Image 1 (cartoon, rainbow over the protein chains, first blue to last red):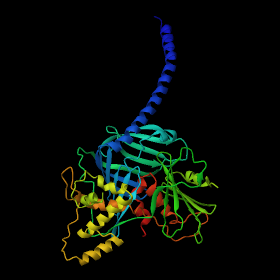
Image 2: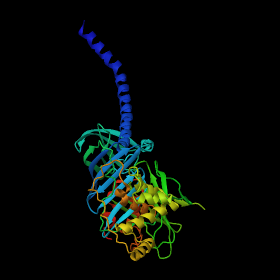
Image 3: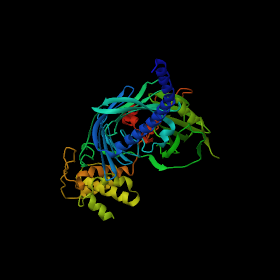
Length: 328
Length: 155
């Protein structure tokens, strides 16, 4: 065997293999993205279907709140108790979509009712389809969070109409251990994550009751009408990927007409549009403002005050405000 | 139906698990009204709770006329462990009273802040109540834990 022959053989082999390697690389990345979406699906379900107890911390700018959570999934129903440990005493109870809050304010405890919200760690919607339209997934690596090994995945937005998110999903159980929201420059806007978490092996629900302060009166909040309403309001071209998910009306004391609140979402980020008729003596609000991850845009149209608020880039709230029209 | 409710409120029937916490929140109309009435009566008798309503003052007035001595019971706290799987209703009476009331009075939303003219830039507190309402009702939760301190701090 001559050295020349050897060289040619090796050369041919590599040329033949190159396209194969390329194909393998492409299918590998396609497979990886599918794999990551499967992890996301597991993460979305785990928060709802597992039994766990833990302590998580929420950061937003200088604001820090510690919250103790207990979650049980029993007979197809979800029970959660969140106790906010910093600041004013506040307890949040939820069973499925029903949320009741006990909120200590000075000399009394105010009881509020809320509609279904994606409370941590159940931040991801169970229907991932809208997210798939608006975000790409990127595997970052593995990290240890709250004593657990986590898969780290970036949710990179397809455009600049939404922020980027990073999630830490428990490598074994799929529970969301941590989540952060980043702006276009990669600065963390807000972050929420477990300091400590443990799986529960009990199905007892004896913890599912508020801690009562017998010295304080318990009063209810009113004025918000959670009935869904429809009117002549049209938002012609919503920013790409956003859909209207709800519309409620708020009865504001001292105002003759209710304030309409329309809620839009891309599956993760949400934006509210408030619409109220301008009446005599009402100062119009016009302009914009940024508060941490929240952007606000106010605007007056056809005798209506419009205010758009959301944890989305300034461009997105502005675009929604500019697209409002009223049907004749 | 009202008799059943009365029995339930008085702790005469077992309530399966914790369904009752949200039962009231889900019910509407006459049933919900009956729930509230029974709870106001019971709470007043036990002196556990004070709910400002015509109902309360009416019952208070009636109680004043009653010769009977009523011993107030201690409020249930979390430190009292309920060990059996199907707890007696009375252990949860507070939650029920709360959620019954929740069915009727929902949310707090006040727009009565000072109005400042700001042609291009919104003043610091001008839209805070909108931000609070957004955090309360939009399906976005992280900001949720801080709203009452961040935006109602000056109340």
